[in-house]
Amino acid sequence: MASSEEFKPDPRLPKQLVYFLMNNHSVPPSCFSLPPTAARLPYLVDTMQLCIMAILTILSIISIIVYVEDAVYIMRKVQCPMKKRTSLWSSAAPTVISTITCLGLWIPRSAMFVEIGIGTYFGVCFYLILMVIIEGYGGKDALVKKLESTDVHINTGPCCCCCCCLPRIKMTKRKVNVFILVVFQMAFLKPLFNFIGLILWSDGIYNIEDLSGVSIALWMNVFLGFCTVLALWPIGILFREAKVHLAEFNMGTKFAIFQTMLILTSLQGSIFSILGNTGVLPCVPPYAFKARSHLMHYHLLIIETFLLTILARNAYRRKDEEAGFTIKTQTA
Image (tube, rainbow, N blue to C red; front, side, top):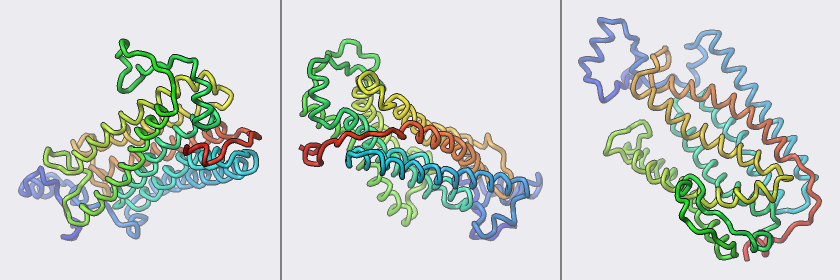
């Protein structure tokens, strides 16, 4: 029987029903308990599960090695300091997510912190992918000069993909600054909300697994979802032009990596969370329903980010001898 500190039945189920299932239907107590600690985990899982975890850990380590090799290449072959910095941070996204997920694999009780860590870094990735596009042109001034004679479509997803009546616009530096501000709000609010969530969690009033109508976590995520959709709009507008003008910079592949990570970290995680909360995924000791949904999500995510790390290496591995532009030009 699990200890009283670890025994944590689902609040949606009456305690009498929980004890009835355990006593009369041989449902293991671990199905209603907290996940095992990192120290006890190796002794509670079978050899096959340990082998799978070891293989996934090796994939994460390989991802780190691949990124380090790519980072050294970027440091040597990209002359523009702004492009160099942005490329290093942006190309690291699959590796960072893989590393954080691997930690969650071995520390089952860290699910909330894993989600916060991934969400915080990927929130910054919204700003980074926009900077990759802008710096591909050579900065804001070069972007405006390149597109000054182009009628830019703004009826792009996810906000306005069906609004064909929207007028086309001429690109100006003021509009580029507005685009940057709209995207930057996501890079700022996501870490801020995660920090607030940690403070509320310490007081016991923040739970990412609570999907009830009075859940603070639910309404914070709804607001962040709106901010995400809003931030994707200017990125989509500029990418629509960049895939034509910046094809030699592998911009299509870079944006595809960003979109794939958005789906994997948001949609895939939400699907597994719903399956765990509704009991669709069976309990397999020592993992309860929700813990097993996190485990399956981590298994897939490590494999997927490993493949994305290889793809990111090929996308960002490009020699660039242009001197680029200064920080003053970029922030003007």
